[in-house]
Image (cartoon, rainbow, N blue to C red):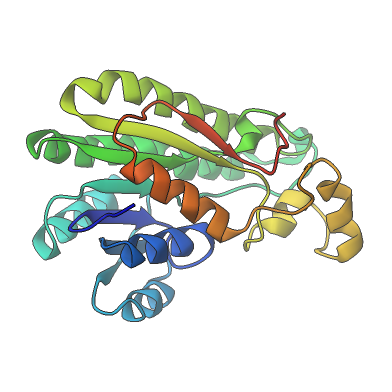
Length: 247
């Protein structure tokens, strides 16, 4: 499976799932733009990728930042062939009435409105370039929700469904769109998802619902992203990367 000569943007790529996706893409021949709020970390990742990546600071909830990201990508490498909308945000696991409006707005701005911004910014360029691939990192939270994460669950349900709808509408322009739906992962947001300290005892409470008996690792998501980026006849898929949790 190769991504030779492909140009990719990965948002939220300074750590976690995004970093693993970016590294896997470079290993398979792509040039990658590491987009993240944390420019220092993004530059550190980019500098470790043998000149095949650049770092760009971007807040995916802001259209001006997305426009600048697309412009920088085109100027540096060319029109992107692949965009991975990985950047995400969650509220802490807590009763739904305890999540304030500002937090709700941020969750939906990062997890949902960012897709609107990216589609408007990049689709015309992909269309005129003959096609492309968009991968949206949704979540099994949008398929089989957990209590305490209601507003996050809703945002990921939207991301999952938007991926399917985009796939149908963009297919005539040879733009494929798929959703990757991880289960709870070993990332910086793990404690927020659990709503309790990250201890072996607390992890065990959540692992009981995952048949394969472990949390999602960044490499699991990276492998799924690589497959979907290269699979020319797959679009509109909502792919659980979940160790069997949605069975």
